[in-house]
Length: 444
Image (cartoon, rainbow, N blue to C red; front, side, top):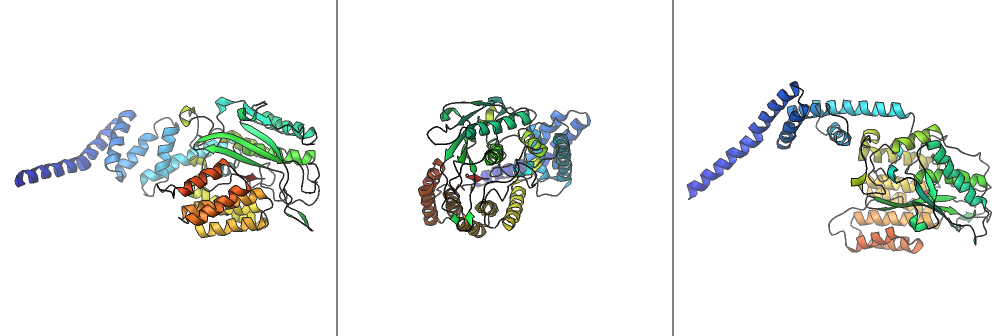
């Protein structure tokens, strides 16, 4: 009996050796022959099996990538080739994949022109509406009963028209029920708690994406009714701010680093001591190029199930914006530069904290969020800072601290997102799931 078991074990070991040693070699040789005869599908099928058996074999990796380059560059092929270009194994397969990715990026950018696509992501994901659901339904809260002039609504509609006309593909329709809307514009009383003898620090509006998993439910633009001095917003203030916020509502979740672009994160919009005296701002080519390119990227978050998205002709986002670490490092540098220029703006420290948190630098993230609290200009900014403090505390298993911060955030600004966070904290992350830090109150 003992000899029989040993015999069976020996046969199993021999079979394993054959499978993982000789089979990949046979498949590779067969794939090479098929490749030479331009039978790329057969080569791909053989190499797909071989690379699973020997994933680090340099010859198999090279011929696998080489075969992939012979197919039409659909989304699946783009993802697979990008994976090898981003591999930690430095070999000819990585070089070949990297060359193909470089060519893709060059050709894409050459077609779309100057843009800031590398700044559009939301928590390292591409968030945008599905084009097949256009026109986007817009609800604008009525000004009746709020003692607000009619030009508030008319100016906001002009801003939507500007995006429609300049883009050539974005369309809108207006609805009377906010439950039926994709984009909601509502008015809120201003928080003037951050005023002193030197003046008041405030923002005119902010945008909140309502997201459930990979589904974009709504975008909510909140416009303050007046400035902290009790003065009505001028048409110029409304125009400049709402035009910018619609850009966020369409999916441009970051900011341009070019001060001439509409989507630049302007510092003086956050700290105003007199009526706005700036010139009107308008959509520039960079803004429209970025929007058009955004809607050619395969989304991670959109308003239809991802399985229903038509991926034909779409690009894999990391080809243009890089991997998660690259994106986070870029965000960190941008945030560090911003807080140097605007040391008293809460939003800059929020971005800085998010970047630190995504890079795993928790202590630095907490310092940034606490600084955001110290310079916060309104209750919304405070709620956002406490929310992110709760998230990083939870992810570092400081559950008591996380609950404390989450409850403070909820007391300031109740929301479904806060409730979900509190539920997650109560479960003590039983399956070890990390929550993403968030800029769910997008100022400016």
